[in-house]
Length: 265
Image (tube, rainbow, N blue to C red):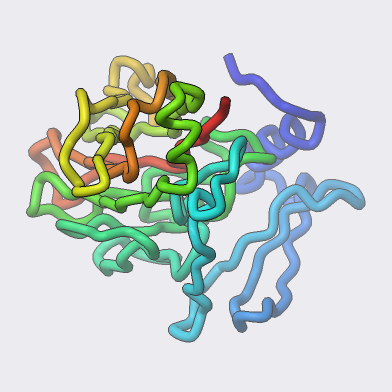
């Protein structure tokens, strides 16, 4: 079953699923964003359900904001560009590599638009609700290689006093999945690191979501893990791994969106 956070989410999923067969269900209009990208709006009545670029020009902004971890913020995602919404996304085809902004990439992991029909996921496929889903997600990209990774190291020294007092808890979460009929998959792990970048304790991992978990369909499913941040932690190393299992074709269909680490106390 699918849960919806509000009426707009429910309407969006219903309308998007029939958009290609019923012109009366949606109204598509085009406009120009500040980044000179053409956008498509999916509306019902007077309510705009989703507006996404249909193309990403080379001058599309890739400016990132610093991680909220630098200020010791609680209750917000400290992963930079965990949602794939910063920088250009692949709007057509699946053979071009667009390195995800804010991540160190090994392999050909790519930011790809939900509007890209050559991708695995769409705005109507099951996944994050309208209030959580943006316009883009991450895909493993062209293969070989069969395994591709995205990594970033987050400075959490602003939480040092609370961490060393055993007051800080983490919640790691993501939406992950793949293409129907395949076990290509994604997973997320992270390690606690000391001031000298030595590993502290064991790593935490969520995923993968395999084809059987997804009922043989292309969709994203929510996974999470929670626990206490270990004493003396000063950095967190986050790694997203997309693995190609299916031997036919040339695309690593490990998909993931909304990679989040949220601190609380």
